[in-house]
Length: 125
Image 1 (cartoon, helix red, strand yellow):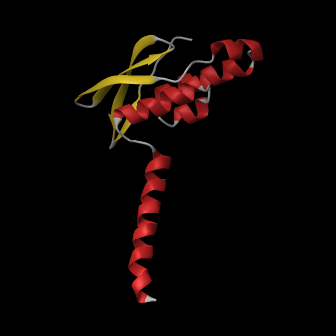
Image 2 (tube, rainbow, N blue to C red):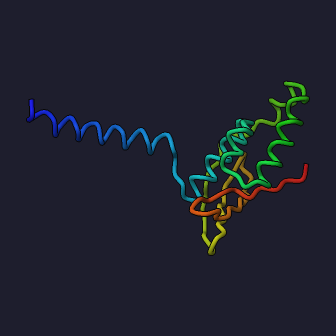
Image 3 (cartoon, rainbow, N blue to C red):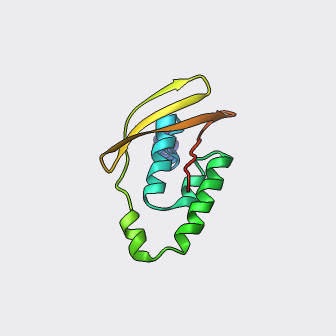
């Protein structure tokens, strides 16, 4: 019985590590940006707000309210493709993540809040 304890513990550690990293995603600027952009592309603004600053959350809340009154056919037209991260750079407590969505290049700015990166996204609505 004792000879099985170590192999079982190792297997559990590997599985648990894989589950935690798979569910949590990456907490570097590119990982945060990808999570945010994917949620926005899916029009899941509640999920996207988890990646953002307070200003970003306010913008997303307003956008979500607007989407609730929009006809379904217009929503379908607005759906975006999946983002592709093309590069990033960190400058102190700010990070810039370059990406393409639907063939259009753009840059997303993130700021460091405590030990976490947050998307600082302000769009005129």
